[in-house]
Length: 394
Image 1 (cartoon, rainbow, N blue to C red):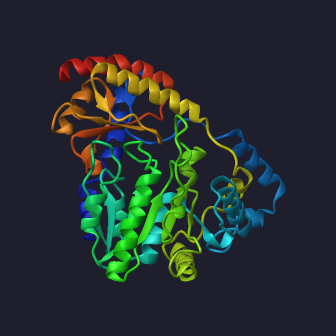
Image 2: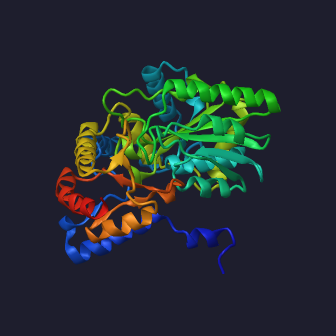
Image 3: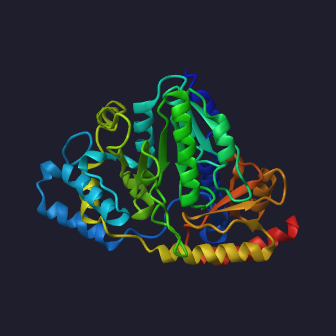
């Protein structure tokens, strides 16, 4: 008999994964090149060549006991220092190795910091649309996820509603920029207003409200867009980062948390997060990949590839009559459904072998998400199918 906590998760298994599995079924029937699977944010751009070379060099040069062994739960000191130095060069910050905690990807990082901060009944606020797993992550530690409704005009956070929903039980606010599923980047003006609200509420309630910035898509920004570094605007900010997208390493599960000195009770939070890494079962981030990251800190994937996909798919869909905000970052289009119930749209799309994720999975019904981290050829082949789909919708 499974636990009561797991029953709703089993009953409402991720629509993203379900659509991915549907894609596998369709490909077996119709052929790989006749199915247009935009369901999963799995990077198709190869990791930079520096990654492969770093792996080879490390295995040839380093002590295998070190390469494959345990280290401090927070990670190798030299790796943490390399990351801190890189952030300081790029964003004019002042971090040191004691601010960086290596994690098993961004997902584990979020779980580590939520385990560190939450007491049962604490509230964590996020903005719809939001990454579907946030609710599970908060629930893991008996917290309550409070959702702010979407501003579908801009998909910037609805700050007026945020201010209304902050209570004495609010322990944290999670933001995600560049954003999954919309591709929006939160502007500096937005972040300053958000910080002012949190500062005001901290004083009003005599509490500490942490801002957790989930940033796996930070490096994927287009048209010269700037992604502001959130710690500059609010002292009680914690940043979660992953190399899954920036270096195309999703299966390697490597990322980090930034816990700045300015954070309230920073030293204890860092120590507790290190222990949370251990007791949650991660123990430490993968040792080999930590060492690889230190050698590849300035490497990057081919963002121009994603940019070409973005423009091709956005232009193709809008020419068909579909409506969406052009993404500034990440690799998703969030398209308005022609029908109030976007599930109908998704089912109709399946007839044309197009797979996309319903917006209800992100607490934003009436929209669908398409991940354009696919081959350019897939996008080209999909456009006639989208044109046929449009004929049935308009």
